[in-house]
Length: 117
Image (cartoon, rainbow, N blue to C red; front, side):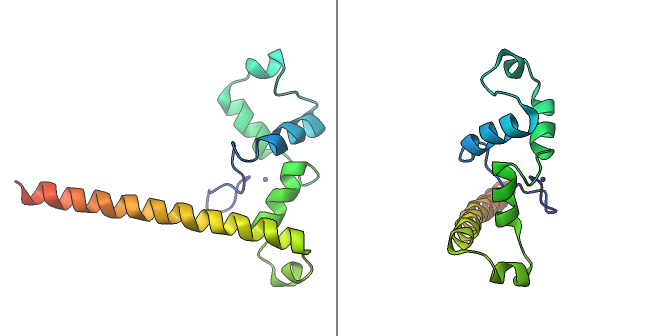
């Protein structure tokens, strides 16, 4: 799946998409996130299970919408699908802005450190 997109950035958020994750884990693996078995699961296994979710799960369907790039497919998207995709893209653009801001601030900090030597 995002989950992994080719750029290594996921098309889901562990917090905002938690309900989709819970539902998808249950539907594909029969696993309850609230079970004792899940509580014993290692993080690495959890990530692997999320990555293995297919497009027939609730999270898988949303990831497919968010990650679609084919103009011909986008022409056939419903208003709701466009909304899901556009909200995700807006969110990513805001996150990138924060990352870029932090990068600039780090560069400024390094410049001041160098100037003070």
